[in-house]
Image (cartoon, rainbow, N blue to C red; front, top):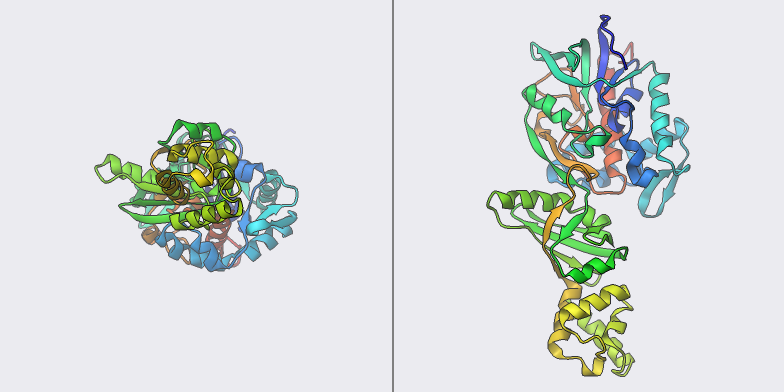
Length: 430
């Protein structure tokens, strides 16, 4: 899109036309959205496998608790109270998007198309007199007497504004518009940032080659625990073997913890340690021993050990676990050696997981890191040190587990900043 050099003082400039930026502009009158890609909202189209799980049912406290750091949990509560999930669903329905609640508290558009969410946002921005300029990259924030006053684009154009909303996202999926611009702009303006690390990505373990034969095998409710110098976290949910790695919520939700731990290990700290409970409800070796012994008695000892285990785990995984434990393939319970049986139960309860790498920022769904939260007021999302500059969405150091929580934060933060901006100009709504 061709840029113009006509002078105009904008009321609000939103840098970034992703989920948070469009939501903010849709709550304002006459906002100018500057998007560096040829199309706004592109990342929305790939969320939820193209279906767009756009929020999650629950209280504001529950949504804040889904954030993966304690600081983000505390910080996001105010915005989630300002624009909670019930209000988010109602708002989208007012914008013409029929919503459907699915198992696990996941809200999707009834159309099952992420494009429904994107198109509704674009319509809402236009209906309130907003404009979206695509193909425009902001390269600098200009400050005057402690306030933001202007943005400069890659072409050298300077656009003055009373309020600027930084919504340029994190650093995950740069091809979809988020390549770290927000952090670079913030750092150049004097704000502190945390480096970006991948979150909600697959894990690639160092394990027996036999696991590569399990590609496509799923577990409905596994649990992965990671321990590192930063502490211990566990994630429970579905788990998917991808051939070389692990995906599904249980893996995705600890990706950032492994990525951060591996980064610190490169700097000399201990390697992050992990373990998998293949069934989250059976995470003790003695539980598995009791299960196998009970099944053995029921079959009078004549049933194959791997057949018994297949009643509790996918048959292909059961066969691999028996092999790794040293249990003969044709071994029946009555003849099962004690040591292999002990090892098998231990491996079922807590498989040692050494992760070599995770998906990088090019493939991860979101990133952890960004503008340090203490520099922004949680109630308004205005910078403490730069008047008129608001930061929303993934530009802040906020990331959450999968399940619609990250988009819920985009809508809540966008609405919160817009509300604060409107409060300063009640006559014009911006």
